[in-house]
Image (tube, rainbow, N blue to C red; front, side, top):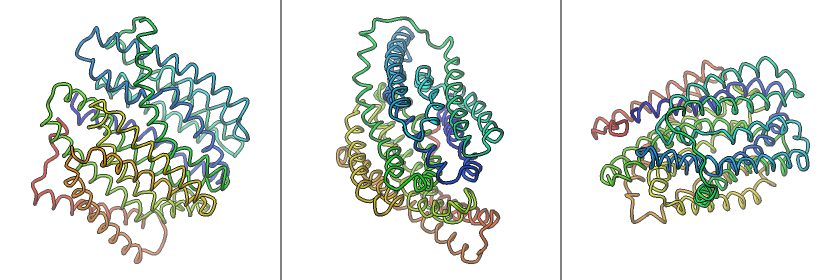
Amino acid sequence: MSTRKNAAYNVAYRMFSVFLPLVTAPYLSRTVGTDGVGLYSLAWSVSYVFCLIGMLGLNDYGVRTIAQARDDREKLDHTFSAILQMQWLVAGVTLIAWFGYVFLVAGEEKTIALHLTMMSVSCLCSLDWCLMGLDIFKPIALRNTFVKLAAAACVFIFVKEKADLWIYGFVWSLATLLGNLMSAASLRGKVKYRPVPMRESLKHLGPCAVLFISVLAVNVYRTMDKVMVSTIAGVGENGLYENAEKIIYCLSGFISAIGTVMMPKVAHMWKQGATEKISRHIDRSMELILCMVSAMAFGVAAVADRFAPLFYGEDFRYSGVLMAPLAFTLIMIGFANVIRTQVVLPQKRDHIFVKSVCCGAVVNLIANACLIPSMKSMGAVVGTLLAEMTVPVVQFWILRKELPYRQYMKYVFIYAVFGAVMLGCVRLEGLLLTQETWLTLAIQAVTGAAVYAALCFGYWKITKKSFKEIGD
């Protein structure tokens, strides 16, 4: 299947994974209020950390390893079996630890956390890493989309008050488990499990653990900030921050989806030694991603103040204030994602990824500790901005002699200028359209998209740009 089709399926899958909870967010916000949203956010954040531990970096390591072994069926089956056994071991131990947390540590979020247990159980049967390594994205997208649509329907039917928050957690937790089970069924006939000695499985533990350090570090500043806001500033402030970040997380999922498709493709190209083709591929990917993320970042910043109260309710107006600066993390995330998925991980230079995200995590924790007590949820926004900026800066410092960063920064400047022009046009239009309604918001969004698209297509025509190579 072509990269273009894989990207389409994976983007659809990732967007649905985040977008459907986003569809239910306005209903949930109005039903349970800021405290309810904050309480659920706290329970889910802790659950998500346990899931990360249970998967131990397999979403990167597994994809890369399977992609490099897929041309030899015997080697593929052996590699798959060894990694799967390691996954069962780690996920099983993590599940036991999760029960320890729920019954011995959890506070007011205990009931919700208990009903999120199937998130940890799903780590035992999550085989997306194998499907993606084999360049199979369609089953993941279609089956998970069906399950999550059913879950969204259940939320509207059964969640009626704050006391029903556990139902919300249970529904999405069950959907994750069922989605993993259905996707795993798609591997039938494509790979076969054969028991291997445990020492073969444990060989994968070290490399996985290295990548896990980076995965955990990333989520320190994407998940632990919510725990810190809840603890220091209260669950109400965390509810405001949660709903602001939820939009950005949805859009960053789009970036991750494209990177996930590119990684097995580029890993295979590195194995074949096609260095010149890889360089062209990275250059085109970088420009395309920066074009997309600049549109997202400046677009969200332009309408965040009107979008938040319309979407979440008047109680969440301040979420729009938080959302505007938070949107610019998308540019940094997009830049770093191209370097990670097309340079660092395919070449097995995992230490670069680990160093960059660990530095980001340290910066985030220090910034949060200093800023949240005085600035509350806005302090977490500033900490996230500093952390996301640190990651590509560290990668640049390590790879500055190997990659054409001057060219990449030129792309950043060009599309940021286009984005700034779009933001200015949307803001000016907002001065004329003073009523805060969905109609005026839609008019602003269409105007912004038209301005940005006109600038991009004009630039591409003048410079004769083409992105067809990426989709081959």
